[in-house]
Image (cartoon, rainbow, N blue to C red; front, side):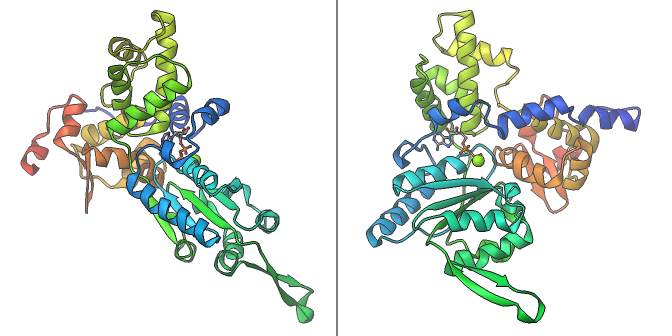
Amino acid sequence: MAIFSDDDDKQKSFKLSSKEKSENLDTKEIAFDKSFENNIRPRKLDEYIGQSALKSTLKISIEASKKRNKQIDHMLFYGPPGLGKTTLASVIANELDTKIRITSAPALERPRDIIGILMSLKNGEILFIDEIHRLNKVTEEILYPAMEDFFLDMTTGKAQTVKTLRVPLPKFTLIGATTKAGALSGPLRDRFGIIHKLEFYTKEELTDVVSRTAKILEIEIDKEGAQIIASRSRGTPRIANRLVKRVSDYAIVKSNGKITKEIAADALKALHIDESGLDSTDRALMSLIIEKYDGGPVGIETIAAALGEDAKTIEDVYEPYLLQEGYIQRTPRGRKISPEGYRLLGYKTSSAQQSLF
Ligand SMILES: Nc1ncnc2c1ncn2[C@@H]1O[C@H](COP(=O)(O)OP(=O)(O)O)[C@@H](O)[C@H]1O
Ligand SMILES: [Mg+2]
């Protein structure tokens, strides 16, 4: 393991610069180009790649809702950013041939924000609330009777003369999305009929995402080129789409515009995206555990503090992919790096780790 001479140095080497953070955000959180996003976003369930368990559940709910002519159950989608939660909500609206109103919890600050939206909806319409774990208590309490029985409890008058008025609402469907299902309050979670986790995509599914996106953008790409991009997209369609565009730019500048295996490999090398597709936070997190904690186990709070990130973000955004790929492991005493994790980062397994595996 690497030995550091002074504590400050250790901190410095793992803290992400604000530039790195914003680059990661760019990858994971922010639509980098709205019109590009809109063009490539699937509109129908059949165009929506992967998530097959979730899709079959949804197909039945959609059919049933149409046959009964009744609004579809409230739904909660959770999972890391870029896996298709927002996309799925609009696909459902399309399939039901209804309107979707898209908002996010931070935009619902005052009671009148949510009340205004609820009252403007029509029967069967969908209200999509992103980052739903961030709703404030008051807004949440307005939503309880709205979701359950479709009415608002309004109070009028003051002190002795106060009266509660029940205002009926249209039969709407709430679709909530969150990266942090654990941060949702129990009463809110209980009001969703369907709660579904979005999974990371397989290499094959991402190859389909890449090929589909390339086709829409009229980018020439062969199967092997698509496979290379897919395998470096961290299981995430948003990253795959972003890479298609970047690699295509490279292909235009350096060659004839066609993405082949060689062009894809060269472009990704130039973009500093290695074979695993991990980003700078993933690497910083793993190097930290290896170098400073001899491979772990180390508590999530400690990792978060050293990286200058919040523990929940590490748990909900960065860690799931590393766990799924088996680079890190969760133990009762914290996180530790697996032999694959060591290998991936080019470290020799530490003596402590060897005896554990
Ligand atoms: N299942 C899918 N099939 C094809 N493309 C997808 C799929 N899921 C997501 N995408 C693409 O990935 C991007 C990110 O999806 P989004 O719904 O914004 O993710 P989230 O809301 O979970 O952060 C979108 O531009 C969309 O085109
Ligand atoms: Mg989203």
